Amino acid sequence: MIVVVVKSETSEKKNTLLTILNKVKLRIMLIFIFTHYVFNVSPSVSKKSLGLSYKCIRDIGTILGNWIAKKQLDEDNSIIKFGGCNSIIEIDESCFFKRKYNRGRMLDQVWVFGLVDRFSGRLFAQVVEQRNADTLIPIIVKYIRHDTELIVSDEWKSYSSLTVEFNHQSVKHKIHFVDPNDRRIHTQTIENRWGQMKRMMKKHGRVLRTDFHVRLKDMVWRIQNHKDIQNKILKIINSNNFKN
Image (cartoon, rainbow, N blue to C red):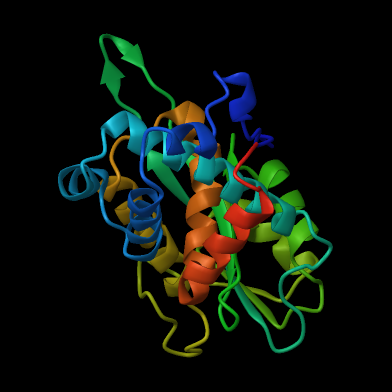
């Protein structure tokens, strides 16, 4: 398991929102924050329309991203587990950085394991070093209640032992995406979430592997809170009092 470490800007040239405010008008900063988080406007559009430099955009995004990631981590670490009676949980893994050659060196893939409550929309995602049962099963046991009505996955072999502790069914993607005999058995919700995250990453430019753990929590928070994101981003800013 990889532990997410949210960096503190105080150790990096004291780069806070207050210091950025000395260079950028508050009105412009707030417009950027809301267009970036509410409407998912890309950095290139913000640069052109608001006159912000890419460095300024990165600085604001890093500070807010760290605050949001910390908020999401606190929620992940709460005692409230996913699922329960009348709940269906979908689980899956997805590759966010493909393996490729770069100047003769092989770069590692980055895999993410996720789960989503189909009815409440609550989402969890975590970078995993391996996709074996020894890695995935403890995460599932930690975050999902044993009285959950149903856990649905694909046929990845690491999930085969879940039937010992949970009511678990798998969808045979080689044959169909939704089981014709039981329409509940599909993983389309979690796959939709992967698609949302990857579109966010593509729209907002290159994400370094070293920063991806924080960026992942930022994206999870955005997806979960999209219906009331304006109020919640203001609460996060206010709770940090413009300082780190």
